[in-house]
Length: 195
Image (cartoon, rainbow, N blue to C red; front, side, top):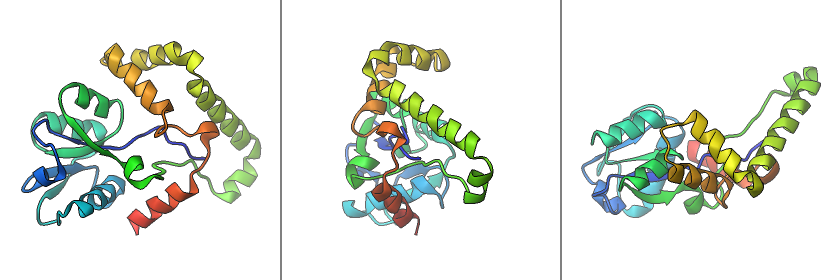
């Protein structure tokens, strides 16, 4: 299955207005040889920056990257909602979205081995049905207020405005795919970045 609701965005400090402003500064990634590092390298290439113009620093997960940006350790990082939206609400700049640049970008997928699927068919079908039902419930805008309330219950630090923006991004054109459809072109892009 596909349809990750994660929407990776290149988020920069308030004083960073363009990729050219990265020169001599540190850009945070999860780890040097995993997903967001490859996205970062790729997004910086067309902006006439070489790897000697900036530093890529491994910082860990989204929360660690966001905390490092708040402390001024990093000029930019790739963040997902709600962190990208919290950053924007605090004056940080969103320079790009991976899906907008690539058109197709499948951040995460759900997979299993054929042998496990064959041995656990009922469990697998139940999981897929439950997941697709949850995705469709979330995409149904009549559930908007309840979905936002659930989000705020588990992320009480989110303002109502940021929670609403997070919901809007998750169900928007860059967000979660209908019925958890797999975007094969997006998977190919992920493989291309990692090769």
